Length: 384
Image (cartoon, rainbow, N blue to C red):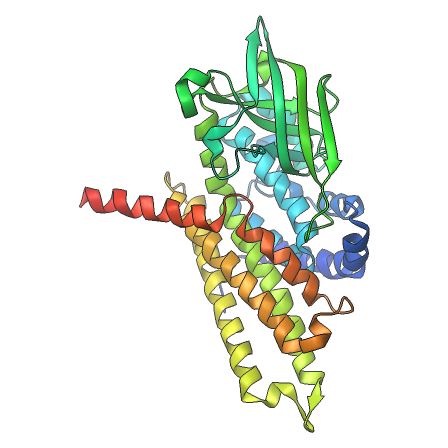
């Protein structure tokens, strides 16, 4: 379908696809096997100015929006979701600063982020605070002109590799969710260390680590927004990032579908290519239709967000849940179309299937997304 991309958007899409095909595809199997962070590819993306897509021009970015970012994420995800996650998580970690930081913080950090010189990670999840974001235990105690952080964050994407971390911690437990605040913590700060690199089912090129804070002292200037804004910052950050997760779903599904079609044209059974069999055609038809429907929704939501809409929680949740559930179905069916070959590491679809599963889990499980949608529907009905 023609989504009426302008000339600059077509250039972004084409550039990301070129990098994906020329730099990512040749090494994706090796990165997956070795569980190696794709630093060389991150450098290529930085040279192509893709880290600055969504950052305003006054801070060294290109001044585009979330839709443009989704275009790049989708193309990278077609090749390798682990690489795409490493890239997209940088935006997730940047959104708290972009949306709520002071002018001084933006001038200090955003130019290096836009240039790709310094990667960012977002620290929210803990061992006992996943879907229940309000249950975080990490604390930030004010002492004079400093905050002292103590606690542990779990399963943090880009952990250990990123130079800048946006961290959600409790500053006043008596206030419940209103007692959380957001902070900027730089790698190398005394008292800030990393746990082991996690061994994962998929997205193995992406680094996932614990963040450990032991009397970690940071200047009070590193507070994002105001004390007590942490939960609001978290929700707004996730609202802005979830369309990108949807774009990851569209991308990995498209990549798996392309492999399945190519295989079905070449695989001969009973004297004919299997793509000539109606059972296979119907599977491919359903896959193609679901991918296009998800793409249309993700693009529409991303454009809606870029329009300046104030409340996008329901729509961003819809984009995330629909596109990522679709990605799991399509990658699974791609393996099925390819049969025993699809199950072998010789072909990329087994990796795509493994990778796709995380999309239903991170940045809010798809069950939580349905809660968000349902609650929004209740509020809307009450207004009528």
